[in-house]
Length: 305
Image: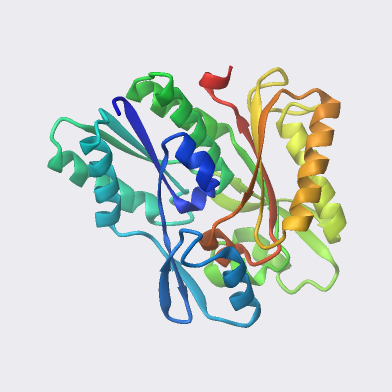
């Protein structure tokens, strides 16, 4: 296994099969449910079990992996034949995971002198990080060196657009990651903020009234980001993009959203390489709460051009 190995953390919310096919190593964060500390691997704690626990009033918190866990993954990749490691992580504005990975990268470099080990703060989350990992892994699979892999990851992450709506803002408020959206907590007027990731933080993109209208706005925002009419697109109207549709314990609504996104993108002639349907992992779900729906649009990356 020569070349560059891509590592990411579980918040990237990549489907297991997709990550495995591209050789992406996923390091799980931790979820604590009523005192039980569990890995965010989708097996030990399923999304459905977490959603049920949250609805039942369980106390839920999250934590990052240890530096030792990251170091082990990085050293294992190098010992497996990799020349370099590129490790991509959720925004440092939302989690300390990336900083822990940076410390781990330094330790891995000490343990394997001469190896190139890079930890990257993607300044985004969920599919923003996940689509960057896919693009980076494709460049690596095509024989790209570490600089090309890093460039692909950084370009896709920087130009990604993440939009989402939550059923209940209180979950984000409890985690302290809600920013300006806090003003809408407890609103009795049916006002729904459409949220996004801007400069690494959660921000209010716009406000609408009602859940159905919020979902429609997700679709239109995705179309504009992908190069639809009048849009300022990540790569311009002619550039190929990938799209991720996310949810947490809301598969039926997410399938409907994915269908709407596909149909509208086809109507506008946007060049879409892939629409990835993905339930966010438990760590993301613990902060957004059940019922979250999201759409992520990002450049497809140099290997897809």
